Image (cartoon, rainbow, N blue to C red):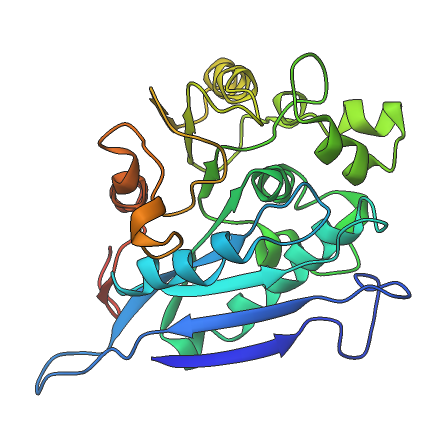
Length: 285
């Protein structure tokens, strides 16, 4: 597997005001060519860890990348700037990461039309803003919309709404405490009819980020006519990530509904249904 670390803030720029830092780590599995078989292209995913916009959780970074790389995907993990940096810094850094991935699809064997983004908890909120605000004024200096726009979204126990039962720390950190900005950044309000397909999953008894927000966002996607899949599992704590020994000691793997550890397979199957799959170069997916 090829791995690399890219300093998104090298040379600074609009995504990296004073004190901000962002690093993109790539995990690209080798794709061996067989005699007489054309070069193959793979999908890619940008992974945005959670952490309440206070930090980036390691549990939702490399372990998730390894899961996707094991299925042949090129996986990229963004460690983005958090508080005291508020919106739009993290969004700009995610946009810069998407632009980098598309600019390097040739060397990583990635189909530039198969670049998804996924996020966990507060990273799910960041992923949702990337999927709805890729043409917003805040990212105009980062790149063209077609360079920034993900081809699919995966929202994992995401922070989505700014009002009612929500994760208040995440909303406060991303908005800098500005109520008007917090309202603007509520994902159920940002949903648009021309969005890419969206996969959402949550657990019913998540004690940190209420499942209500995911349900409201799914309802907004339905009202807008956006293709989506929604998985609500009956049981599981917040921050599960891969929900197995990759992120927990074997004696401390949390109890969950039996199919929770298979969420990544369900997400990849949904993405494949939408055309994000390994294919031979020059052949339609």
